[in-house]
Image 1 (spheres, each protein chain N blue to C red):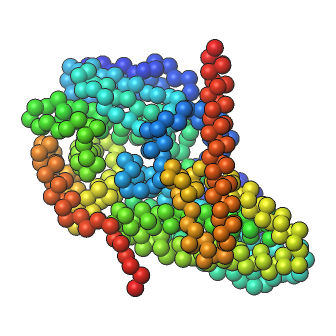
Image 2 (tube, chains in turn purple, blue):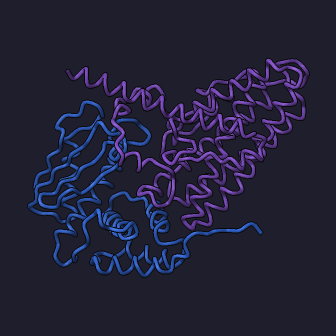
Image 3 (cartoon, helix red, strand yellow):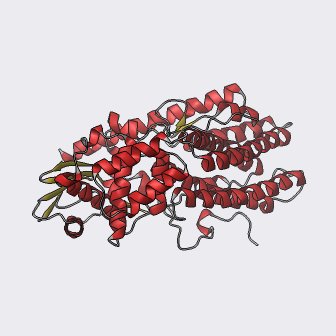
Length: 283
Length: 190
């Protein structure tokens, strides 16, 4: 069996459609002016939003494909590295943690499928992007674990907490219950990432710095131009309490909030430049 | 009855104005709209999915391109989504033009539960005519506005499967169900 497979090689049946990220980024409609009404529609995910049930369905489908990739990523981490003490090796106990995570992610896939049924979404109704698995392709096990277990599973904490609160406010006992249980697992996964980062890099501060830098890159990328943050217009809110339980300190969480704000401002600036370019082209 | 689509030629999204007009004509015929001009304005610069029924005489539907788009194929037209969006607006236009239906408030004054109840009744009628409809999606939407209860599910069933309800029947059903909505779960740690 080959090691370090690429995201293109992930096995999917014909219900799934891969999103073309280049096409998504270069979509001329991204240059549309953001008016107040559009911002409100795309704001914090709460049941009083007009499009709330459909927005929750779309987010749930994103969670579902994310769970598949998280399972694939943790599985690869079990297999891609040998047990040992070198930089490209990992302790046996780390593999055990990844095996436990596979078990959790497989259960999350099943829960997500059931939740999608409950919410009226078909498998593959929305396209899939493979950002998550791409972060799980890093050949350095510490960087991979930091990018996936701290940055991406950290995002999962924020997403699950948002969905759990959505279920609570809407009075949806099924959604609230499922998200609460998955959230508990995500806290454990992030804690694994925090613990292994500390243990493996205890005597290698340079490697720890590099891993945390990779985490920052992934965190910013996954803020999706302001999708996650602490402002009212962010659909997904930073879940400070649960991140704290998973080993994040206050400074780290403030930094993530700042990165998200930065990502949002950059996206707005890109939109402004694109509008100017479109206006110039029109003459 | 003729549908005109604006713009006549799309340059940003891969939509065909002729196909949209033909679909609209077919749907208008199916829902019983006779002798009325229909205009559909698509904002192809907007990727979101907001739509509204701006006028009923003549019928004017305004939509952002995201509402008619295939969620799996960026900027490509989705027959299923367009049928859902146009069908709902055309049926609501027909309801509003029918004196027997009653006199619902203007769209911007409709409460969310009332609007969703009416939407369920329109999609249900489209389903009865053989058009594709995501029943569970609409049940979820209805539960979100009326409660996750057996009463809400029963009310949904009435709205979904009835042939023709009046505005008074729809709004009363919605109000009665909403009063039984237990609302927020507010679970406390045990």
